[in-house]
Length: 161
Image 1 (spheres, one colour):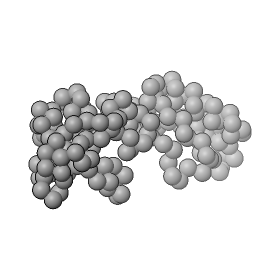
Image 2: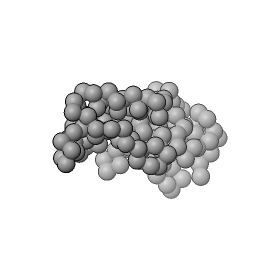
Image 3: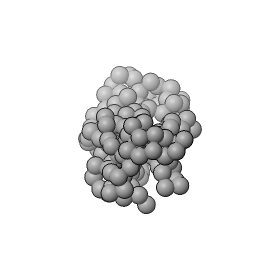
Image 4: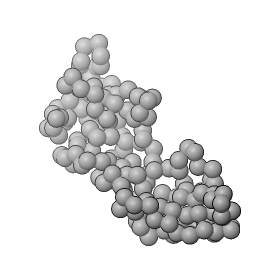
């Protein structure tokens, strides 16, 4: 486990990036930006101490001296690792702040078409359980109900797109 002290020995922080303070042979030179983009995960990773670390976790540790179980990117951008865009979160809060799923067909978060009822249904996961907020003829109304429910139950972690 890397410590805040070790991070500050190895790196300087600059606008969402870690900059090497030391030469690492042909791998990295002092003054270079640390890390590489991992396409599979969609995150930037940094190799140090024989291990690859997620950059946003290193930056959080660098500033706060501890690692929460989850770190949320406030704006939803996994490569925006500015410290002001990172906050500690629970797994559930981190999920609440996700963008709409790729397979979303309504175009509205937490709204889906119910074929049997021929209506738009609204549902959210709250405290690990799916909670239903009704069926609506109008997609706009269903989207409004979903947004209000997210605001009420997800608070600062509510993401509306």
